Image (cartoon, rainbow, N blue to C red; front, side, top):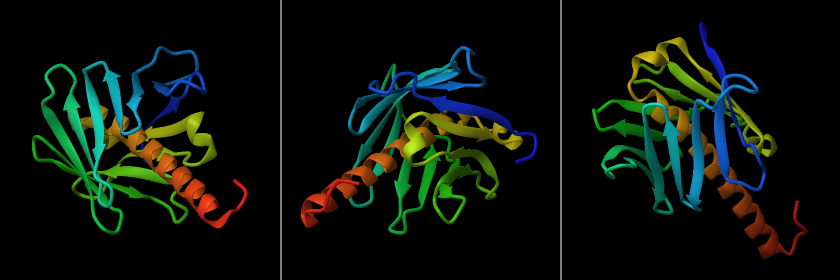
Length: 178
């Protein structure tokens, strides 16, 4: 991603379910994401505050709403292959997909398939630090802040789903936790 800006989502204190977006260590946070329940989080950025809510089990939908009036601003739907698309209230469609075989890096892509925002660090390091790269072409989209916060929300949900599936498998098979 030429001309990209490197940011980091960090979790300041491990027990708290709160994350801040930083340009460098010690800088003031550019945005925040905090969990309100198991399937709901709120995000705050310079241009507004919103809420994310996941609903459904088999093909879950994530809805983004403005915090002040509850107006829906975007829907992220998943197909049966696990691909997710986000449609904003203005009609722009973005695609969320893995960028590597191991599914440790994810990106938001614009309608032309160009990477806009890339997230790394799925797995054990997710709770501490998520490097987030903003591509130079991302600035043209009004949904930039939404995509940045929603990307972290979806990574955390995926990590939680994986941990729950692992725990259920261990219980079902009588295996020791990994």
